[in-house]
Image 1 (cartoon, rainbow, N blue to C red):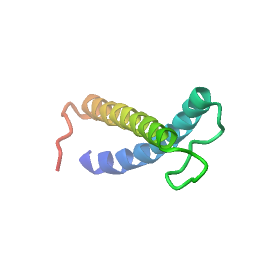
Image 2 (image 1 turned 120 degrees about the vertical axis):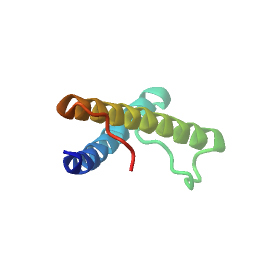
Image 3 (image 1 turned 120 degrees about the horizontal axis):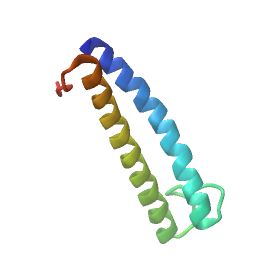
Length: 87
C-alpha cells in the first residue's frame, strides 16, 4: 500500500501547486487590483510590492501544501490503519 502512497502524493502535490498558484493570483488581484503579481525583476514595481507579493504567494503555497499533506496522511491511515512514516 505504501507503494501507492508515494505516486498519489506526488500527483496531489502537483494539483495542489496549480491550485495554490490560482488562489494566490486571485488573492493578489483582490488585494492590489492588479491582474498579476509582480516578478522580482520587474522594474515597474517597488520593493514593497514585490516582497508583499512573494510573501503572499509563499503563505498560500505553505497552507495548501500542509492541507494536502495532512489530507493524504489521513486518507492513507483510513485505508491502511497505519500512519505514513517518513522515509
